Image 1 (cartoon, rainbow over the protein chains, first blue to last red):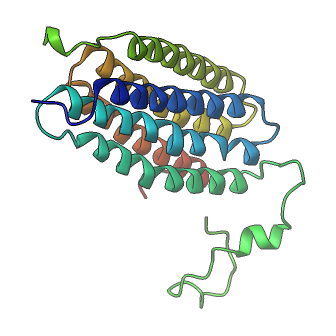
Image 2: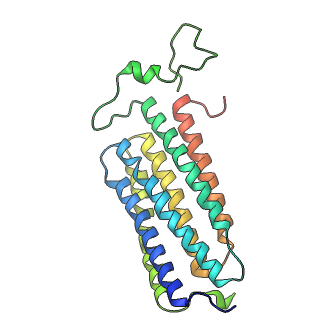
Image 3: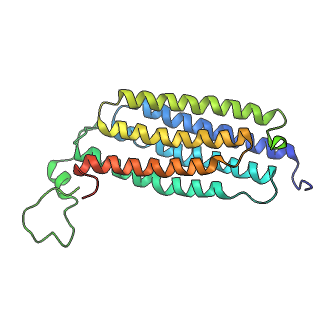
Length: 134
Length: 98
């Protein structure tokens, strides 16, 4: 297969993507280790997932499309899965932390907000007793 | 499979740096997993460990020039998400499947 793009350019592009992705992954874990409260710690690994692993997967897709005949696209599958699931997981972890009353740097919202935010499901709103549904 | 390994100078150097950085990320997530003052911190550290493992597997696939590791990376991402959801659900509701 005659190369449409010179190998050196692909190699420079791949190296940049790999180093940037690994640096973002490392920074995400560094923030996870160093930030002060849970709600700050929650946001750094999400950036590591999106930017770090995302660019590593793009680099891998380019690498295997370059090395092997044909297009290699199943890295995109991993990337899409991670992009979809990272916010969902972060949302569930934040809900768990609020339920356990984990305190942040600026304290917590008042109890009636914490307890009353999620009881608006229409099937149970008429039963009277307000109970915490998280 | 031998001619698919990394050639040249730039790419092996970048891969070596990336292995070092991702291994450092794994160690820092492990430290948060051990230290973490609350349970959500530990869940978050475990989730980050899964994501870092996916990154490490992608790098290993490029280093060895093998396509096999993507299935492993996909499975680890899948089970990591399921584990995160199950643990967070357990903390919020006291039960996983109600």
